[in-house]
Structure formats: structure tokens, C-alpha cells
Image 1 (cartoon, helix red, strand yellow):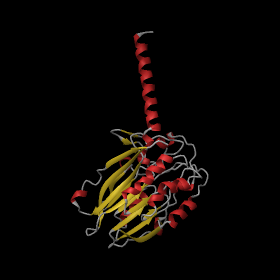
Image 2 (cartoon, helix red, strand yellow):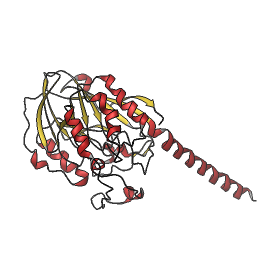
Image 3 (spheres, helix red, strand yellow):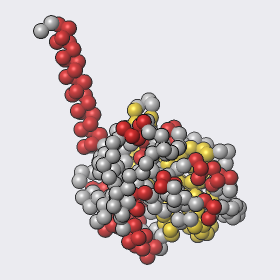
Image 4 (cartoon, helix red, strand yellow):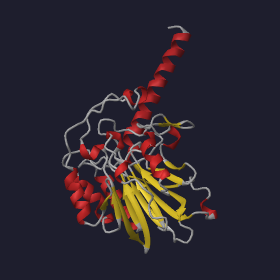
Length: 321
């Protein structure tokens, strides 16, 4: 064998080894490296007291996800003022008890929720390349079997959480008035913002919107109506990120730079997108994008310490199924 062929062979073997190692890490370690993201956002009225909001999204729970259930349950130790769940809790018809084991210790805290596509329909095998090359608006949705979202909704409501699907409510959290509104999943085109349209109470400490998929067509009217903050999920933070580049896709019309974390939407509203805690069971990999929940400290607008609101810290914990 010539020296050139030997070098080519060594390079090929090294490339295959690197690819196999990267996949093993993404599938075996990264997707179980549960992470708490923290951020401080200046979104409250100037005379309001800080609020601690735990943002949970995209559990994509299977009954076998016992480590995830334990880790999420442990978040109750944070004692948040409010828990917001932005959907895609289920990935299996028998997963409702598993979701309730995970979220059960959090249900005594005030909570808001809406649902996503994978609460309504189970996942199905799909070609991952379609997320990279197909236009989101032209993509055909491939639905799996219906999931028991009504059972999950009933359990949440029974424990006092508020379903904000096409609803606007005023609630009191830590002695402060919050106006909160939500829409059904824009990814499935279930959203009907017209049902909650209008200016929320300007005297509230916080005007909060929630949606599963952060579609600009939904974010824009929230901003126009004067909301301070919108929480969303769906993107998985891109799920596969390239260091120095970031997310390759968002699986919606949101630009890639906003695939996870906090950003401004317009001049007055903040957006926070959770990278979520799960994956489809047919694509169980994450790279440079660990599964996350977010603890957001909301502070009054104009707070000096909140000017770098997009800067987040992390606390990680590795779980094994």
C-alpha cells in the first residue's frame, strides 16, 4: 500500500471514530445531562417585588424516563413563586402517570400551562433531514396516534394549575397581580390569538404570554398588545448545535439566534425560549445543547443588575435511566 493510501485510510478511520464517539456522547450522555438555566429579566412594573418563575417545557416523557422524572421532581426544592409549562409533556399513551410523578412535587405551587403537538399526538419516525432542508410552512405534519392529553389536563387543573389555552386570566402570585394569556399550539396551526386579543391590565405587576411554538405571527400581537414577557418551548434549542455557530434549525419561523434563552422581541417585550428536557424517541440525541429547565428571576424594569438579562448560568446534573 502506498504512503498516500495509508494516510487516506488513517484519515478515514479517524473520521469514522470521531463520528461514532460524537454520536455516542450525544445519544448516551448529553441527552441525560439535565441542566438548570438561570436568568434575570427586567420585565416587572417598577414598584413590583422580584418573582421566581420555573419554566418547564418539552418533557417528551416515556414511562422508562425514570432519571428525568426524579430530576424534574427535585426542582421543587427551588420553591418557585410560579411554574409555567409550555407543552409537549407526552411521548407515549401510557406516560401521563410518569409526567405526574415528575411534576407532582411542583403542582402545589401556582402554575400555568398550555399544550403542544406531542401532547395531542404521539411521535412517528421521520427523516431528520427534513428539518434541515424543508421549508417549515410547507412541511406536511405527520401525526402519530392520539395521546391522552385530556387526562393530563384534568390532573393539572385538579391540583390548581391554570389552562391558558385561548384564555386570559388575572391571578395573584406572591401577593402580586399577574395577567397571563396563552394560545394553543401554533406548530399545528391551532392558535387563535383573536380569542385573547386586547390590551391587558396596565396596572398588573406582570403581563405574561405563553405559547408552545414561538412563531413570530403569535409573538408580534403579544408585543403589540403590551405584554412584558412571552415564554415558549418547541425548538429544543436546536437540539444539535455547532459550537461557535449555534442552532442549525428551530423547527419554526423563529430565527436561529433565538433558539434558546432570553432575547428582546421589539422594544418593550422579552421572549424566553426553553431548550426543553426531552427529544423524540426516534431521534434521542442532543449535542452542545443539554436538556434544561429554566429558573427566571423577574425584576422591575430599569433594574441595573438586569441589564445583561440574556446572560445565564448553569447547574447540571447527569441522570442515568
